[in-house]
Image 1 (cartoon, rainbow, N blue to C red):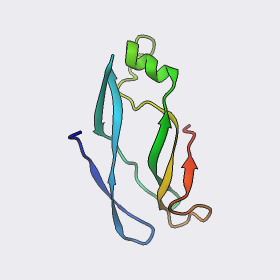
Image 2: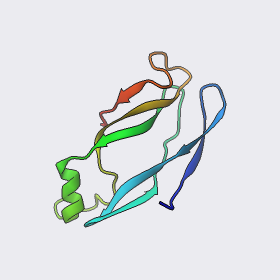
Image 3: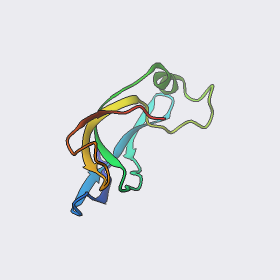
Length: 108
């Protein structure tokens, strides 16, 4: 993999950390590319999750195998639902979680 994207963050103690953010994007029928993935702005009430696992569902496989036949304009996208990982950074006002906690996400 030759695509590497580094973005700077300040952790809750004000120290700089580096985030390598890449995603496996379905870009066309039968085609996946590793590309830089945008990291959203980080606020005092946010957490940053180091992704470890993610499930892929049938609709993701459909887009990979057949493209956008039913839903034009979806590609490119990063497939997967219900990812899990560990907290890498916790915002200044987050009190119920700490760095290293294991978490499961259900995206909206």
